[in-house]
Length: 173
Image (cartoon, rainbow, N blue to C red; front, side, top):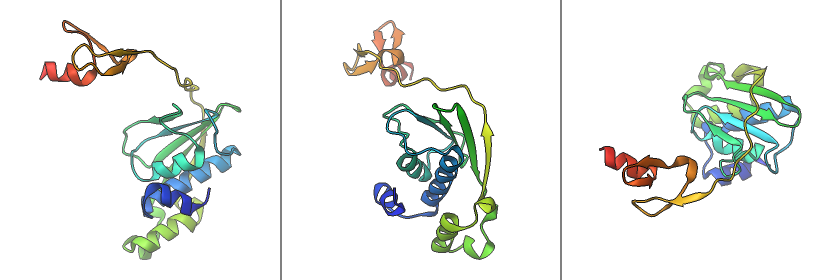
């Protein structure tokens, strides 16, 4: 996938998107894998910033397929795991590798992140992780309060019956 396609998907060009592009590209190269058509790859992302859009485009890992796992740690870090080989790689972005002359200019910063030397801004290590489960299909049950369908594993058993999380939170408030 071309970078311009990733920009089009994301909606704008920015340093954050470039970070995701470089991290995902580095991980895939280290694993010697191509974009997942289904759940061949799993990505664990530690932030919900712009770069995750680039990772989705490059790796094929998405929330909808169940092979994109979000951990809200606020780090520019991704772990990409190949189910085929059982190998995982953790890639970490290091902002201090961006030269001072590029830091205050958004375009120069983005250009350096996209094209600068990998070892200046990325550390990469192979990691062992427990293989994440494949996406499971669950039955939906209507919430006893709002009537909206809810995945059965997300229901809360209350005096009002089986209810969704938002309704349960309203009852507690």
